[in-house]
Image 1 (tube, rainbow, N blue to C red):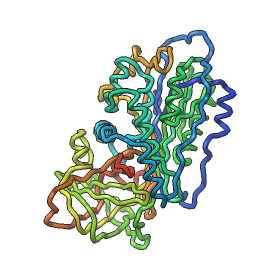
Image 2 (image 1 turned 180 degrees about the vertical axis):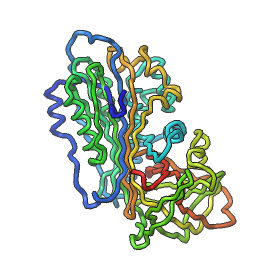
Image 3 (image 1 turned 90 degrees about the vertical axis):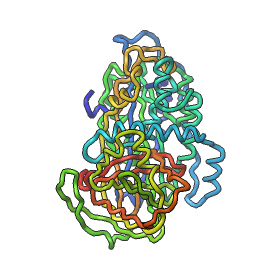
Image 4 (image 1 turned 180 degrees about the horizontal axis):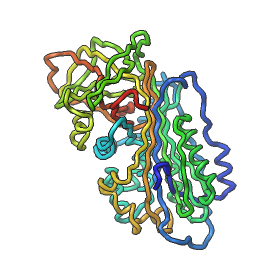
Length: 458
């Protein structure tokens, strides 16, 4: 597949209902902070029919289900925030599965890249979870094993509860996840799959003509609208594809303590090849803050106003970011391990903004997801047609400045409890060489994991 062929394949709905859905699509909004740098991500999961010729028959009669997004609460409505958590419990076992998925995939995807890399484990998780909800047999077993959940019913329910916990749309912050199914109108689809996708993944479904290039344009438009115009992918379609699962995650939040622009200064950033660039660094000092020091790294985090955090991991001199993410165990240690400390933290962070395009198929195969890409793949819970995945792509964009962060992802940072404080109660987070970062949701879920190799690289 061509690199720009980001998304391929899933669903079938009567045309008049599709037109009704189009009338209710979200429209991008223009905000005062639009000029700020931003982070957004989307992932597309492709399923293409293996059969050479389609069977006869008309599309299924399944009705298009209107997707009503969770009710947004105000920034300072703490009661509503807690109510959303209470009504939509997410099991600790599910959060642990998300963590393990994030570390397993990051060690295969991020550690193997060169240059700046931004990856959203949450976006990939939701796309694969939708595919798993319609898989059977060995294909289902492999998907569920990778996602760390024993059965599709639990996966759908917990994904829905997590969605409702995470969903944020107020005057200060955004954390909006969007899913859609794009289905070949000549294929019959299982209503149970479509209804589950709408109920637990808030998925919009569209019946499309995959012989018309305008279908690719509509899909690209949908991605752009749901990432606030940050991502504008080129999506090619083919006549033999039958379904595309698209997921986007859009995140924005402000620093609790904004950096003072007057204190932003130019300084040296030392690249891994030994050369030097000069970048604009944001500067701050906190007399009382948490940090951790582990084998080969120092870690600390900055709080965001809606209880998310951005975590920074500075490798020791001579240690590369890729080395710290080279295995799931090392990635977990970098984000969760080390000896806790509390005291003065000096920050020097380069402003950066860049995008990443990732082909995830080979990494998923290395992680044990093989059946889904073979001709004998079993997605009979989605359609009676023979279908298999042909590709998985992710495109992201991230940026930070003095005001805040805008992004999409899933991440969790935990600090080991009970450790004795460091004898030297000070940490210098002077990020003047390649470093790792992560963005976490209020419940600790990892939204993004990335490496900044060069803050001037776009």
